[in-house]
Length: 416
Image (spheres, rainbow, N blue to C red):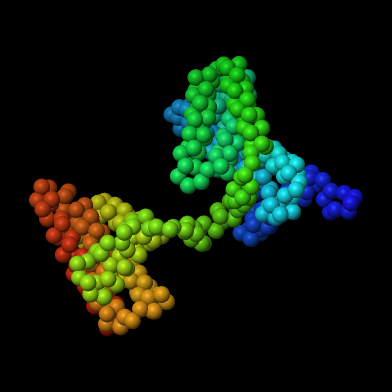
């Protein structure tokens, strides 16, 4: 059968089609957040203002605060940039079915995808380096040759980090991935920072270090082309990198999907929390476990606790107990709302609990959930105000305050 009968008779044309499709996909994601007209009103003035500042950095005095920053800040910032991003190979799930007999096509797509990703990495790194260049040359008196050599070293290190990190991500899963990923990306970055600091005035040594990174990059590139048995991991990582912009835009709108857990990370054996074997006690214990096991609820509880402790600590002494009472009331209101959502869940509706039993279980669970927050806030108040006597005072004061406020909210929020 003639190859001309196919829509894509060769792998390069298929890769070109997927690359343009990738560009359209990313532009469509950006357009969902902002119209191009709005972006132009931001980009054009921002570009002109940024260009004016950049011109001033080259031709006028640098800001005074730059004199207080060590040169180590430059390679450290660049190293942080090198740790971001990943590889886009433009593989798709259907390739496992339709290109299974054409391994050379898949290899060609992977090769071109890696080259494309390395070019994008180089452009991103060079753009950031260009912004920092006035501070490197004028602020730290680095020669022109050394500045160019440092750029070459930065590009070589960025390619090395991207390839090594990508190879680990597609080969390892779970905890072992982090055991391999952390040293594979941090060791090259540490060597890069060390070379940039010690050889900042030696262009030849910087170029030799860049050659070392380039050799590792070439070896990793060749190894990745020969890698087998990682197709599904390649597709998963590819999809994750393509959706980075969408994830960034939706971070404040949607919650991050929770990973599937086959065992809870706390209360694994699910021991009974309360001594009583009554149904109400078991129901209350289930709500406490649900609060602790849910990452979103636990994170919100810890965040409010941290903010509350800071607020109690910084207010004047005469206002500490008033702020303490207000914070406990706010936390009680949120915990009582959590209980109402938990008790009103469809799954809980299957269980034969009456309204009175739900109210009694909520009255037992609310003081227990509130107690850690109340005791910690009491400690932040009692220890600075009453010294050694505060060590004896903060636990009973926090426990009593939490118990009273929790019972008050239970009385008028949990209808019997």
